[in-house]
Amino acid sequence: MSDHILSAFDRDLEAVQALVVKMGGIVEEQILNSAKALETRDADLAKAVRERDRAVDALEEKINEEAARLIALRAPAARDLRVALSVIKISASLERVGDYAKNIAKRSKVLLDTPPISGTPAAIRRMAQATETMLKDALDSYIQRDVELARDVRQRDLEVDQMYNALFREFLTYMLEDPRNITPCMHLHFIAKNIERMGDHATSIAEQVIYLVTGELPDDSRPKSSSVIETEA
Image (cartoon, rainbow, N blue to C red; front, side):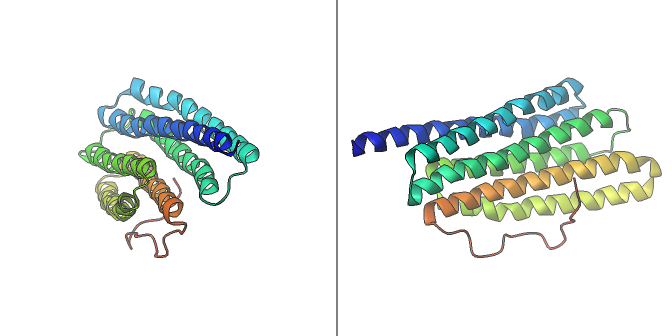
């Protein structure tokens, strides 16, 4: 009977984790598509990103329900409980990343009516690609229980911060050069900030992996660029 219960718990846990992986795949696409819609000024793609956010929200809700049911029915202890709780925390981070991608798509639509700012959409795309890779590796580290990969993701958050700071300085320059650039640059700044926060959530997932495997959260401060500008996005 004990083996039967253990097997049922493992199957349920694998099913919930499969949902997390599915959710992660959608969110990765959302990151890249939102940046592509901005760069190519593709209103249809931006709309598709906004609409697909509902699928991300629905998956988070299902993951939370299944994880809660799993904990209530199986009463897991120690490491199994950490795994069950990790899917809730990771899905929450993924949902936030999905929200940021949706916000980028919304601002992309507004930017269609403003003059383009030379070079910045491509720079934002590169920042989004770096963040998407961080998220992919964070999820891979979760699937593989790879602490070293999780630690590497955590260190890479500094690179995203530095890209954000460089963009912020560019936006200031453009705004000072021509007042007509103020509105588009403000939107682009908030887009860049959304992407920087995506990196923060990818890092949070990596930290959950470290906790899951070792039983302890990293005891050192998360690497951050000292000049990163804190604003509400």
